[in-house]
Length: 157
Image (tube, rainbow, N blue to C red; front, top):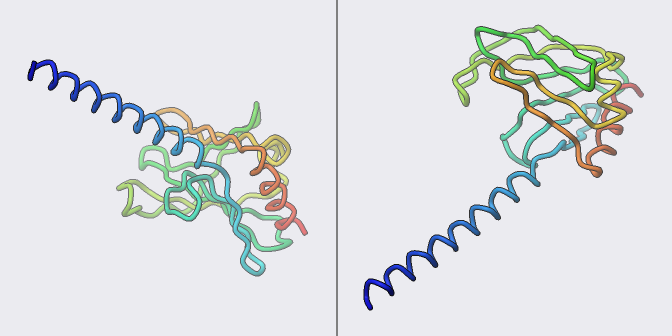
């Protein structure tokens, strides 16, 4: 009887942990999106969890500059940021420095708001960061698509 009760407690604990893990995966997945931050003449658009340092890619610009500073992690073997939207691809090279958080390299590169890949991203909300081991799909939610348009309007105003 004690053995059966112990098995029952074990199964109940497993179900509770599995349910919790499923909920955490849902929260983790649903909370990652494009986030806009405006501060004076500067705008920042980051893909990650809101109000955190968990960012996959960041774009920033000054109002009316027509230029976007793109920043993200790269590897020493491939110090380039490759962005893709649909069939459009944009390869960015810039200054890379050690990233204490990932042990890799952090790179910043400037491009124009007129780049075809960024224009398509602005229209569709679809952007991917191609990396050595695959790619990070960064599709915008419906709410974030408006923020993406606001970001580019700020950069181009």
